[in-house]
Image 1 (spheres, one colour):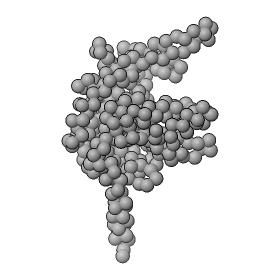
Image 2: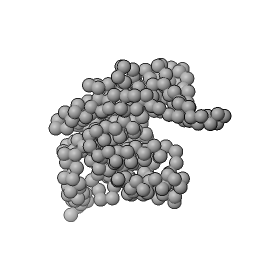
Image 3: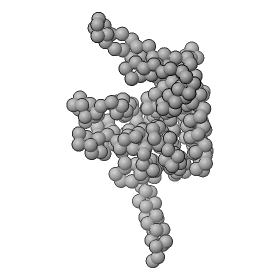
Image 4: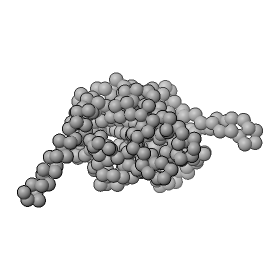
Length: 297
């Protein structure tokens, strides 16, 4: 057997090993949050698009929700619009939300759609505004005033939270060839536009669709223990104890909270995945051990 034949046999063996996982997820809805370095790096973006097309081809129902915080920040700088932050959260005024919509629903959304279509899929770009897919409400944050010790509401402007998701609209794509790609922009009941955190938007959509998986692509390996080792699987009790003892900090906490909320509301499991790995989705879904941290109820 020559080297070419060995390579072919290896590929065939890999495909047969993936078959049980393909059967497991066939007909199931998977909501994928796409962001971070995977969205900026051309090679990673191309491999992500190929993964999404393959998932659809083998009978899965992938729904993509994407972010774009760094790109919004860059565009605000270019337009000389000053960003104001309160406790690390960007205050989004009328000008800023227009830029956010332009970047998210325009440049980024259509770029992802083009990548998926180039890889052989049939993607369509949407935002929460389309067919009232997501109805937003203002995101409420509070803080204790250190002088008066009184809790005060922080006004973040047009930063929103998904109050209602039109799952029936998304279900139309399930038995079609179309892959929805959703920008985290939505309107409230009065028609005002809001920018929504992409993780939160993906979680809300996964819950309403009763997804088999919520997959969050990140710029870290997954959830790490105190020694820096990847935790392959964890439940809510484990996650809560890691937050309380300080093992989990910073931006990982809201991601964990999103995953836990989803698993408490009809999502079978959530996964935090290292989006810096090529074909991370396929490795997570079609191999025995996966490449991220699986979070179950």
